[in-house]
Image (cartoon, rainbow, N blue to C red; front, side, top):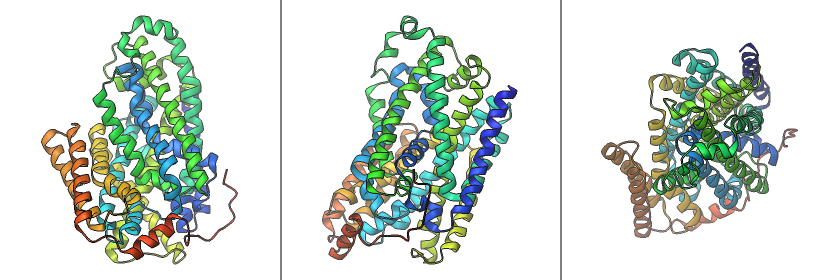
Length: 487
């Protein structure tokens, strides 16, 4: 394993070097939080694909393929569909707003009264997303170095917190591009064909597995519907995703770059399912479906290639973890702490202090994430809570604000409160992993939003006029500075 270890160590050292490089670039709030809003289409596509395809999409996607066959692709497939929908229908308008958080968008649309409550819900979502990504380090480092769970979480989490704190979004952007390339080579170009060949080819796979393994709907219609509701809609409204949209240098970059990333996700989804199906042929009695990825990598890949593929898995986890971490810190600082103090910094004022403040919050949130990850055991439950809160509490007021002129601040606040409370209460009653909480929570949020909005005074005409001006991209220009990294 010496060669494999060398590959991993070089990769991790490179991540830290990117953090140091990013620190020298991130000298303003805009540079630190959204990479100066100057990413070109290729870099934007790579980083967007990197953040949405994390450990759950890689290790979990292969595990679903092992358990259900080709229909195991649906979880990651719905993530790709959500990214495509966001890119085609909403990303251009979102990018033109020139804000930093989803809550700032809600304040602009509804008149400045939704920020703190929506910020708390979004913070809880991004925190749990960062925690679940950090827990995934335990699986990978256990395969790599045979270390215990706590050490693995501290090692992986410290590296991510270090480069994210140093350079903010610039560090994360460059590291995500490296991670995107590593994932593409490791999973799509190496592991996929090797797994199929080792399993005897598609004809042998069909001969040895039940026919339902090759049924596109074999995982079940209700499961697919739940994936669409949670992941497709979750992609439309998550702070971690929107913060990447804010990095695009133009409307066309956000639209077309995101479309490329979404299409890549669809291919990645199918690849993971095929790898898992091949693993089922080779290892029909694994104790856990999630062990399929590590087992096939450890036992079937040659030296060097094994290290690269494990680096690809590590890249998948790191990209999601770092994106969730900066999103969590941005919401905590800009939407909660600054508002509670009554301080809302204007663009261009106190930029260096803003960088220090956001850097401190990334460090603080990073330490909290590592501590919670060590204490928490059930990744699936944590991720389910995060997405249920996000979709149940924020989907309706966000999409309502973008699509329905009659929506009001009172309706939005009621939707957040009722949707979030309903999801929490229903999870307590039905169980965290049940489908009913997000179903009924979302319906309750929608009903309250419509009823309260129609029962209250329409949003002030001046607020709506300012909102339309921002959507059109007028009056939101930021100081331009030279930037060679816009590929």
